[in-house]
Image (cartoon, rainbow, N blue to C red):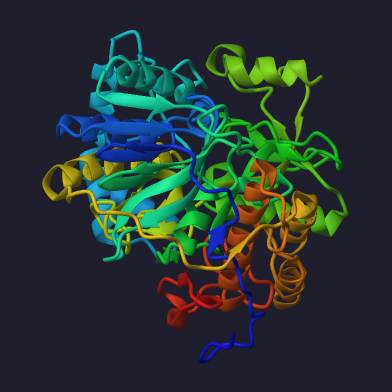
Length: 542
């Protein structure tokens, strides 16, 4: 594949469907929602408000996604001294010129009402002695506007409240341990449901189909494509890979945010790693090197609370220059550390570290995908009847770098918009057509090779040479595995999103936001636009 005005890129041919057995059972509903984080649960509740029957499917247990791990909180202009306009400005600055302002305006203006809805559902947010919400600050915010719960357990409390509301609604049916496979399409190209594998459901291998009038993907991120990540094990890019195979447009995949302060457990540690919330730096914790010197001193006016891409890059530069694989987060002077961050302190002690008496070893790790399936302001994708929200989606609000604590807010706001749109546009059920694309699978034995190649060449620091090597390594992985299994489906999805991410990172010849190319010092005006990726005969980046 060669793109006009760009260097030759590695041509990649990916399967158009996952190899799987024929569906042994069928369910019919109005709306099927994939995912049970803040976005999926909110979408299910708002779709129900329109009277639609909802089937919610989730890959593991209802509370096993990324939402429960969110420590910092939800950003919203709830303080009388704050305003949506100020929140908008901070978001645009963090997004490094690539935020879609209309989408950001929707986020910041509708956000406060969505947070109040959560409180009305029973989410117990932390409050001060006066009974008002206790607001704090995180990187990139010029106001205290972060709502939190349990100090550092916001996601767990939000998840608890939403799950309780969904379980109380008899019109929402739930299937756990359901791995989504591929989108079903009607003759007119409209989404008509999906195939999935459910443990213990129907035929021996559990493959079945859901026929639906609308499909909502809220399946979370793709952090597991890297060797070290804050994401749970279920975050294997399933939704983006499914959308690519279905012909949907995905966008901004090159912008992967690496969280600066992830607890470093040693050079051999892989998979999900413990996150040390940015809110700790909001309360005074500092990133230092082994000598105790501040890493962010003189780097940015906001110091340790600079946008995450700037902090992660500064850390990577210091680590590279000094030949070390980690730095430190010194939180010993944070007042009331054990009360404000009880979950983090307890977890650190479980792992043999005491943040009250010693600096904690930290290194950046893959945290959040700012890109995903491209949607409009109603959450609709380029495939009619297919919606996306949460981390799997690219609404345009994050641009080149997500502002801290805007992720839970985005899930709330745009999931609610999807519910409202479905109420007015729900089409009649169409008969799914047989899939015609070439089926394939990646042997799960190659999963380690995928994550290693991505970490080496497409991580925090990227270059033309490193990305070329990554693309070549991915292109060499065969997709002819004959044995279908959950592990093979995950490996195939990881291979697809890794290939698409790498191609987009090769194409974007500049440094912008969370995408850093060593050959380029900064952003270039000619690159102030989005990159769209589709899967035709081969992967195409436009």
